[in-house]
Image (cartoon, rainbow, N blue to C red):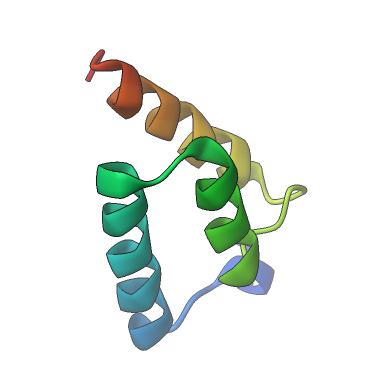
Length: 62
């Protein structure tokens, strides 16, 4: 993986905590804002993959 998108352990933990809360209580727009705030920008290949997983989880497919 490119070092450009590497997160430290505390950053990853904070991201996961935010994502859990959004998955439980939030919406897709809020989810994307948190990803961007945590450094996962639209051009990052992981952004689309994570968003797809979020949508699948919200729809109950996973």
